[in-house]
Length: 119
Image (tube, rainbow, N blue to C red; front, side):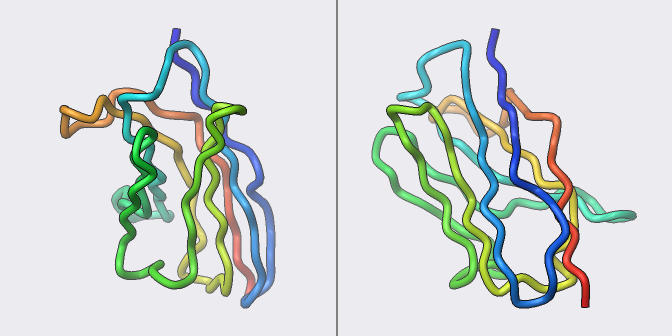
């Protein structure tokens, strides 16, 4: 059974940093793409970043480029989202997700972790 467990959220001031972790288990993720999404109150869930587990190639939403970095540690089966220069607009519940690299839809989701950036 696939499980994605996020951690690392919290309260931080504007300009601060947080590192989110997503511990993945239940299968081999070599052929998967791992993504981070977020959902702010009253808004739809939006894409933040993704990484190919096999190649390490990454992609980011324009709103976080240059501030956020996604990475993975294959030995720990963990994906990270390093968030720097945080802004109040980054406040949201952040979700880790996984999809097989030939599919478009993410089939596995974590429970989410709250990130709150105070002004």
